[in-house]
Image 1: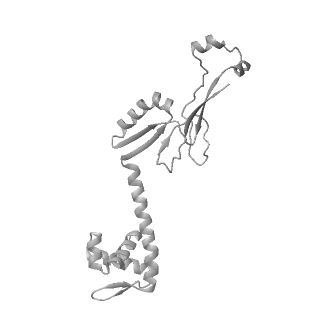
Image 2: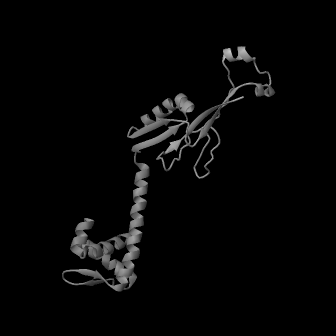
Image 3: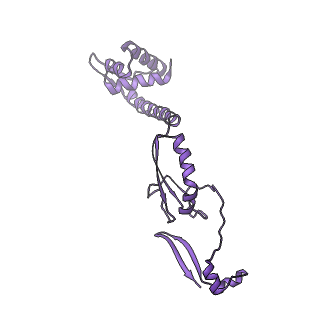
Length: 205
C-alpha cells in the first residue's frame, strides 16, 4: 500500500477529528480511509489513535508521527505545485529597465518576440541610464553598458559595443582636429558618467 497515502489518511483523520469527515475531505469512502489507516498502524506496529464513537484523537505516539507526516505531506504538495508552475504558461507583470541607447535600438524586436511567445505576460519597460537597486526597486531584469559592480546579481554579457569620440564640424573648424591621443589635452571634452542619482554629463578641458 502507498505509504504517502497512508500518511495522508492518518493526518486527515487527525485534522478532521474522525473518519467520516476525513473521507469527505479526501473524496474517498470511509472504508478506504479505514483501510489506509489500518495499513499504517500495521506497518508502524503501534497504536496512533484513540477512537470513540464520536471522535478520533492522536495518541502520544500518533501526535509525534503526525507532526512528521504533516511536514512530509506539505513538502510533497509544494514539490507537485513547483512542477505544475514550471509547466504552465508564464503570467503576470515583468518589470525591465534598459539602458537608454541600447533599449531604443534593440528592445522593440526582442520584446515583440517575447510577448508573441508569452501573451499572458505584460511588460513594464523603463529606458534609463541611472544606477538602480534592482531588488528594492522591483525590477526583474535590467541592462546596462559597462562592467557589473554588484557581484550579488546574476549578470550575463549579452552584447559588445564600441565607444566613438565625436565632435561637431563647427567645433573642429574653430580649434582644429586632434591627430593623436595626446592632442585631447588641448580640447574641451564632454564626459558621461552614471551615478546613483542619475546620469551626469561633465565638461572638462
